Length: 372
Image (cartoon, rainbow, N blue to C red; front, side, top):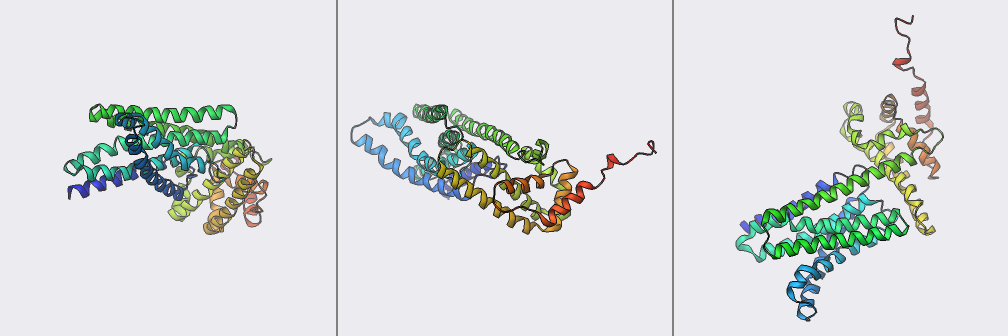
């Protein structure tokens, strides 16, 4: 029974950490199914490392202590990052937030299967091993691959020599962090220090995602302000995505949580379109640009489906709420989709409704009793 409880802790807690980190992806650009894929790869990476590390010892290439402290961490970080090298080349990959999330997921996958080996192998202290690992070793694994994913993603948006330098720094940092941790643990460091080291790693990833979100907000504001009829203030709702729940509160009261969820999906896809337009500026490959253009077109079609699910009356109400808050996001959406040549121009009923709402006199424009 104790071993089963320990295994549950060793499996569930790392997943909760991943869930916690994913909540900082306010635009929702990190795909859930990709996180599943990278976690599976993390398991495969562990299996490969479990063959390579002992082989280095048995062949006499390195002493056992050297493999545990130095060679092993280097091999493991390389293996976990292989899936990330592939993902950052895909047209549906975005920026550093995606890199951090997917890297963190790969590390969690690696850590979960490693937890199983350690818990079962130390059944007499299974509970202590599980708790100690999920708050220390697991977070080091997740942080290491998360930082590498961030560095690879940064290179996606910076094709200069500096981008390669960032990748080098990312690998050195991750491997150095892992080597230091293994060395400390192997020399008998106190448990609270190991846990503090792991939690420090989560703080690093949180800071990376926070900074990445700020950069993406700037990109969204820039790309949503390109139309002749769209000002910088009209991108306010996406740039200030942190306040989205407050902005959508009237819609929630009128139409319910389900409609609000659909509206959030539309805003998230619009943000992703803007991010991809920005990344296209630094993509040298014409074939990659074409792939990204196709992704943008698909996102536009998905948004059109979501609009139909929201319904015409709710959409008009949404526009009214945004306009009353000086946000007018739906003008941005229609303008940006039209400029992306997706063929989804909005138009028709929504445009007429928007015109009527724009012409509606505002309270501050009405003459007061003192003016009469």
